[in-house]
Image (tube, rainbow, N blue to C red; front, side, top):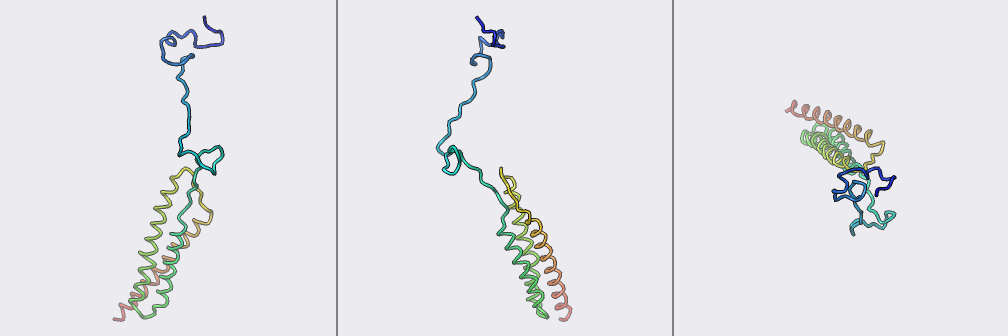
Length: 148
């Protein structure tokens, strides 16, 4: 005899199904494993870590770019010193910025990512400083080569 509250009681396949009454599969049970426990998370669940941009790489890129500008200005008539300044501001700072971008892109794929609002402004500032250093170094090197 069927209960009037069971809407699937008239289903002819429900009797032959290995499913529990009602014709639906049994819901999976969840039993946490030993690795899921965390003292900081409520209920013993595993907490999420918040991914942030690699600020250290951005600081290194800024320092290398500023050093390249300073060497380009201080070089005066010294071609090798101007060339070192150009190399630091150009391939050096741009290379570190590309490493920053690569690692930041990987971190953005994390479940939780939080970027401070000032990161974009600092990134573009470092890029501008590197560009100024490249121009100053290139002009100093060109001046030195022209006087040879």
